[in-house]
Amino acid sequence: MEEELVEIQIDTMVLLEPPQPEDTLTAFEHVMERGALVAVTNCEDFNYKMYHAHPSGFAHDLLKDFCNMYHLRLEMVVNDDLDSCFAMLDSGEVDVVATGVGLTRDLKRSYGLTNPMFSQKCVLVQRMPKNWSSMSTGNEVEGQLFRSPIDLAGKTIHVSKSSHAIKVLEHLSDDIGDTIYVVECDTLNDLELIKCVHDGLIDYTVVDDYIAVVGSYGLRDLDIKLAVSVEHPVGWAVKNCGTDSSLLNAFNDWIDKAEKKHLRLVVTRYVKNRRLFAQKSNEVKGGLSPFDNAIKRTAKKIGWDWRLLAALIYQESRFKTHLESDKGAYGLMQLMPSVMRRFNVSYNSTPEEQIEAGGKLIAFLDKSLKDKVVDSLERMKFVLAAYNAGLGHVLDAQRLAAKYDKAPDIWENNVDYFILNKSKPQYYKDTCCKCGFLRGGQTYRFVEDIMERYHHYQNLID
Image (tube, rainbow, N blue to C red; front, side):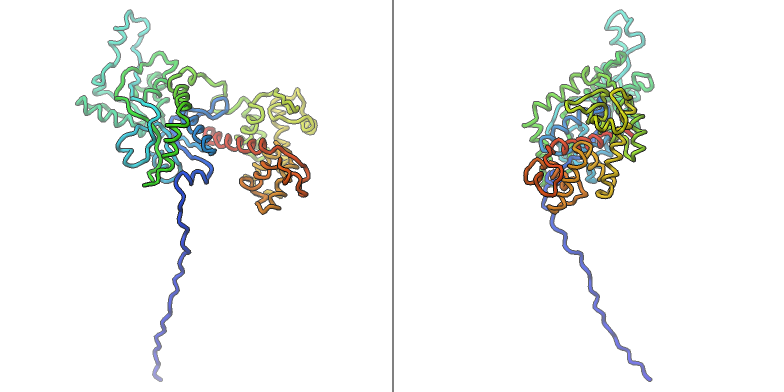
């Protein structure tokens, strides 16, 4: 039997992805929608540090002022490698490089650069000659110091990795017609290199003049008078988004108009008034408070990051052990008398006992909310709110959220709305509320402030 070959054609149906909605938001609108500005800076000791357990620093204070103007949270990252900072900007990890970059033509071709904030020049950091203080005349001292860029011929100068001082020294080497040997240091920032010069570990470094002023404060054996570049304007960098200059315009509007006076004050505080900036903090080095060990022990017991618990204690008492509020709350954890009795602490209890009692209260609140907010990270915000306002008000806000089609187990833009607005009769008189009126703005800010401080602590304390 002859087999009949039948050709069967099968139509292949191609499944197409549904078209994605066109993104019509500008760069600044994206930041506003997120509710946070993400910035990267360098030179942690100058631009972003903890002072009395509070975030501060030159770049931090300026960025915080910008964020306050637009009601944004500030999220900061520190990276001493300038190339990495710009790579983070290119990839969209950060919105702005706030490192005090020189507004050069090369950078202008690739990035959006803000209007100048101030001017700077590069200076040489060198040690004073041995026994300089016992020399008979100032000329004798001056005669042993470099006072012309030509003196740098054949010298080895250490700079931080990716520093713009590298190009300054390259141009200077061409100008003087001789070699200047430049060593890039991967692990040291500008302030650390200044200290290395002072300690005799390296001979020279080149840094921006305002960094040199701050870094050399109190180190009488250093000289920073030799300028190796002309003054050039300094600003910040944002991603080049073609015709979309919305974020750049927002920064420029802040720099040139609304916050110009504050900008001058911050520049004066950190750049010109070196004495104020160089004051030593009474903090424990590398920590947040004198009670870090006790905070870590209690945090481990309750399953919290110790930096979050520290942020709560700072918010409550600024680490003051005998602080008493007008409502009777006492101590590091600002415990009410009824809570103190419940957990067997008194006005004579040690800081460690106060922290342990506060941890027990947190553990109780966490257990009470565990079935209602399953995600442990999300639940922390509910616990913080309950710590401040009481568990009953948080449960009221969750019931209101469920009634008005919000997520009762999500804090931001859901339950926090009803905490914030629980002073309105339409909510506190609702039949699902059992605890009545609450001035919720304080609780709302309490959670927001602690979470923001926690983020800073995560950045700065390992």
